[in-house]
Length: 294
Image 1: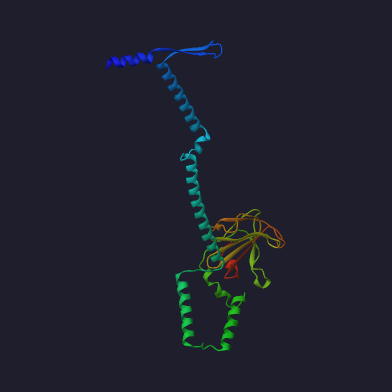
Image 2: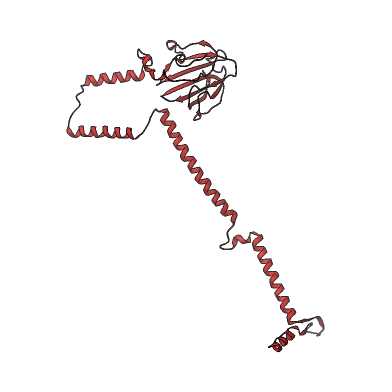
């Protein structure tokens, strides 16, 4: 066995000469002296170099993206990030839609719940049962006409004898003073002056009287920069003749938070002051009865 191995090794190491001659003149051009072992090593080296070059070209160049089944970790990471981003955007859109719906309900003084739905359902069932039984209403036409007139008077009458009891719900509430200063004009509904005028140092901050949502934040020719805030219990406060508005429509504000800078803008302003109005259930009330401006 050892002799065979030695013969094989001798055969591999046996030298051969490879000569390249010109065909016409038989002139020798090139001559190589090598063994089978040298030939095997040369071919192996060439193959290894080719494999290394091809692998480098695939790994280090964009050619790898054309290979089926080869994935880029960066692309996968981007896909995951985009998935998280889309989920977050969907959540934000849903919250925004719910926020807008709540704003509509606040502005319309509308509250929907199970009790309202059940009440409406019971009323509808009652009407259907009344129609099925063929029973007509006992109210006469005069009574219906009188009820309609009373409802119209309640909806459109701004001032009346019941104005003192109308705002009974505001008596126990505590309101933050919007600004502290000197009164220049008071509340007078007969003169259509539905608020109070307060003079204070220029650029004084105007603060909201209670928690709420900004209902209006704009500029008008008569009142200048005006901001209105919707509060609980269907109450709205107005701050007029400001120089700068600090909040936008839809912003939620806390009691005592600055919402504007006092100024004297608008044609109805004779100088720097704050015109403040307080409305409850769509009717103006005297702010001095509920707010301590001193």
